Image 1 (tube, rainbow, N blue to C red):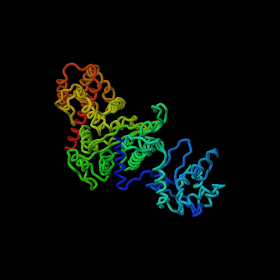
Image 2: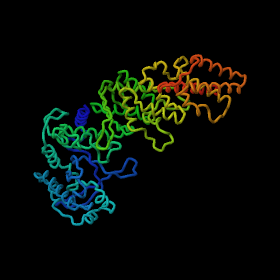
Image 3: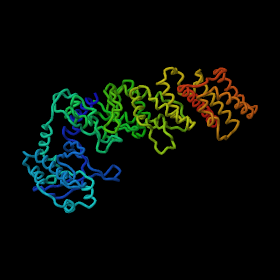
Image 4: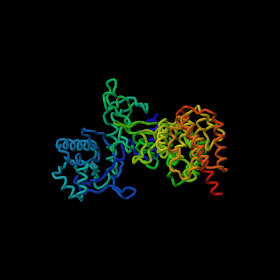
Length: 581
C-alpha cells in the first residue's frame, strides 16, 4: 500500500509538472564544464548557490539523468561525473581503477549519443577523445582558483558537461537519446507487485536522501544486501519484483516530500512526511502547524477552530484552499538503521479522522496550568522532552519514543508505555510535577488504563473523587501546605524527602507525615488558619478511611501525582486571588 500510494502521488505531481519525469532526478552539481565544438574545455563555471542564510555555498540541484547506484564497482553517470570519471584522474593511488572509470564514462556517453549528430552531441563525444596530461594545470587555465581545483580533484565534486556553454537538457536530441536509453536498457521482466503490469524489474532501487541520521549519499527503502534476505535462488531486487518505473516513481515522490523542509517533521530519530492523493500542500501545512507550535502565520485560536471544524466533518479554507475532511490522507514515518531505512509507521485515513485524533490528544492532555504558563498545549517535541533530564547537554529523548508518540496521536491508539515510564523516572529524580508531566500522566491514564473511570481524570481539582490514590495526593499537598505555614521560607519540605516513597508505600509514610503535621499545627497556634487546615485534613481523611494502602501500583502512582498537582495548583490559585484581592 505504501509504494502504491507513493506511485500515485508521483503520477499526480507529474501531471502538474511539479516533479521530474521518469529517468530524471535532482542532482547536486558544483561546477560546469563548458565545451566548444571540438570538445575542448572552454571555461569552467561556478554553479553553487548560497544557502538561505547566505553563510554557505552549496551544490545546485539540477534535474539530470538518474544517478547510477554504485558502491565499490565502476559505473558512470550520464552528462555529469567527478574528476575520476571525466578526466581519469587518480586521487586515491589506484591508477588502473581511474583508467577504467574514464573508459566506462566514455563508452556510456558514446553509446547513448551514438546516433546523435547535432553540434552539442558531437561536442560531448569529442570531449572524451582528448587526453589531459596535467589535469590541475588544465583546470587552472580554464578559470579555476586553487580552492576550486582542490575541491574538484580532492573532494570529488560533481561537474556537468555543458556543450556549447549550455545545459545539456536544453538540447532535445540529447534528452531523447537518454530517454530511449533508459527505457530500453537490458533487464529481466516480470509482474510488478506495485502496478500489476508486466515490466522490467528494478535490480537496485533508487536511494532516499535527506532522512535524518542516514548516510549523506542516501539510503535504500528496499534492498537485499545479503544472501540471508534472498530466496529461491533470486538475487537482489528479483526477490520482490518491483518494476523500474515503480521504483523510480516511489523514490522520486518520497525524495520530493522529504526535501520539502516546510512540510517535513523531524521527531527524534524519525522523519515524518504526509500527503494527499491530489498533492495539495495546504493539508500538509495544517498538520505541520498542529505539531510545530512555531508557526507565526496563524494564531493558535484560528488553528484550533480550523481543526475542530474539520474534525466535525466541515470543509475549511486554509491558505485559500478548501480542505475536505473526507480526502484520503497519508502519513509516513521513517528512520535509518545500519543498512537501510525502516518504516516506523504508515497511516492511511481521511483527513477529518486524523484531525479528530489530533483534537482528542489535545483534549486528553488538557489540564489546569500555572498562571505564568502562556502555552495552551505542548508541541510533540515539548511532550517527549518531559522524559529528558533538563540539566543534560543532550536533550534527545529515547530512540523511537517521539515517533511512537506521534503514531499514537495520529491513530488515536494507546500511548507508548515508555512515555509514562520516562515521566515517572523524571518525577522520582526531580521530585517535581510540572504542567507538562501532569498533562502526560492524565492523558496516558485516560487513554491506556481502562480501570480508572474517565470522570476521575479531570482538568482541575476533582473534589468529589473517591479514588484513594488521588486522595492521597491531595492529602500530601495539604500536609505540605501546613508545613509551609508553620515554617515560612523553609528550603526543604516533605516533598523533597518523602514524595517518592509516599507515592509508592503510603502505609509506611503517611502516619509519620500526619504526626509531623500535628506538630506543625501546634506551631501555627490557635488561629483561623489552623482551623482551616484541620478542616481540610478531616475532610480528606474521612474519605480515605482509617487504613492507608500498603503499596500503590504504577497507574495508582500516577493518580497520586495528579491529586498532588491539582491540589497544589488550587492552593496557588487561591493565594493569587487573595493577593490580587
